[in-house]
Image (cartoon, rainbow, N blue to C red; front, side, top):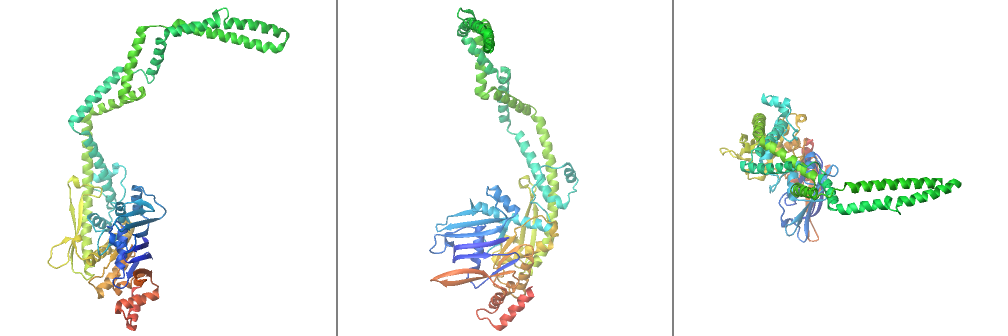
Length: 589
């Protein structure tokens, strides 16, 4: 629902704020006061084209903004475009500069006009005289028919088709309440199976080229026979020893001599010190621990001496072994340059290409299985799509009769038809079926039916849309069974062009009926329509400081009588027009 609309320096508006409510919101006022300008401002916020001439003379930029109640669909659009959802309201703001350029903000975050246009169907549908946006395109016509039929094609699909659902679809036992969701699920399953088959059935030359490459890589890694992820580190350590064998032998033997063999070795020195300290300990017990520590030190020195001597004796200064290790390390380095920084990555790469080769080698089996899955998915999709077509066709026959009657009640004499055409080629398959839904109308007797969007008159288009909306709301399934959310705010500008009398009262009654389910905003010049308002706004034009200014305000009950009387009698309000206005207001309750 639209909660608030603001405009600053927009056309003849310097600054206005309008707060709307639920039900039927009507805007009235003298011709040229700026009623349609407010509708155009809302259309601009919903993605309409901006022009520099909307900036009020003397101002640098025009600023329009509005606040809508949030909806799940609108929140999904915001999240898909990286815009934070804040609370239960959505703030739209648009700035237009004198050069025609501007900026867009959603919830005070920078956005684009494209995002506004994505968001518009979730919030409002505007039927302005200029018709710059919100046109009743094929997708919206299909959505309206689905709403009338109780078909829900807007639910998110499940992850996969259950066995029970597959069986129902094969046997054409689809429940109407499920058909909308089923088409989404079936389409997702078919598209996934088709993509997998296309991937497996890629160009033969490319597949063979990759198979040759992967085969070479797998063989090269396997022939290297890597013993483990740390083989290179182990060999590097052995290489360092072999390359420095003489230095290591000399150092080890020198250490052995210093520790144990020479006359002034550490062991000899410690033995002498131990003997002297033990002598001290015989007379003074404080040296007992020191004597034990020296004994431990002698044992440690003896162990170290034995270790370095054993190391020296086992050094194998083998040039052949060194050459073998260097060759092996060169092989491992080559693998790491080609397939990974470490042997762990090399081993993993080998396993990966082996798995890819296995898939290619089993390609015929995989393709056969993929074709089977595609065939099953095609059967499932065609079953549910055909059911969807039949349901839409039956609903179309009912809707066109109701809509034609409703339209003709609004001072028009038309023939109306809802055409459902199955486009069964796979290029037309989608998550909402394969049907092309189009509303056709003939506004003059003897003329052929033509697409609805070719209607030239904005007033006629608004009346047709009003009749369609009322037909859907009053003639479709019980609302509790419907799960499709159409725009919650409908805007009609100059819906009363070319009508009067009983037709005008019929328009007012239909607007009132429609407003029971959705918020409706309407610009009107007819008192018969204005009398049905839940909220009645007066748009006024005045002159101040040499400039024309437009203002809007919600009228109180007593003010409404005077405004409707003005709409009846013109500039001079008479007692008769006032009484007539009072009667109209009482009758509209």
